[in-house]
Image (cartoon, rainbow, N blue to C red):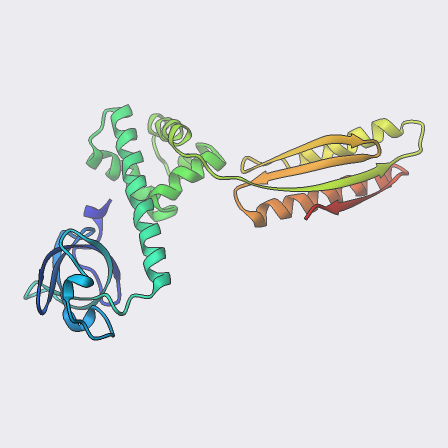
Length: 262
C-alpha cells in the first residue's frame, strides 16, 4: 500500500502526482504515493517554449513526474515532466493501477477475515509484495493455488480468503494457439494406441496455468488447442504436447505429424 512505501522518493524515481496549484513560474503537486508535496518548475514542464502554462498543466490533473532533487531537511522535492518518456509514463501508470487494485483486493480479504486493512497488510500484504508484488500475488494464487501462499507461512484461513477474493475479482486474459495432428497406427490395437497417446500427453503436461483440448476433425486428423495466460507459455505447451503425441504413436508402430495453425 502506498503509505508503506519509503517516506521519501529517491532521485530518478517516477511518481504519480496530482497538480495542486498552478502559478506563472510552475506548479505544486501532491505525490500520491508518498503523501508529500513537490514543485514542478516551468522549465521542467516542456522543452518547447511555454506561452500559457495552463496549456500543459492544470489543477487536479494526475501526471507521471520524475524526481530531480530531494532535500529532506527542507522538505523540498523538485520534479520534472519533460524528462519522462512516453514509455516510462505508460509503464508507471500501469504499475500504479495494479498497486491500487492490489490494495482493493487486500481490503476485501481483510473484511472476510475480520481484520483492519492495516492488520491485513502487516500479516500478508508485506509478504506478497516482497515475493510477487501485491496484485501479482493474487494472480499467482489463481495460477498455483494456495500453495503459493502456504510457503510464505500465511495462515490457512487468510490464504483461503485470498484465493476466494482472487477467484471472484480477477479474470486472467487467456491466449489460444491451435494446430492439427495427423496420426495413424495400422496395428490391430491402433485406435487404443492413439487414444493412449493423447491421454498420456495431456496427463504429462497438465498445468494450472493452461488448458489443453483435443477434438476430432476427421480421422486421422485431430485438432489441438492450448489456452494459457501468455503466448510463450501457450506455444511451449503446444509444441511439447504435439511432440509427445507423435512420439508415442511412432513408438507404438504408427506415424504422425503436426501442423501449427497461423
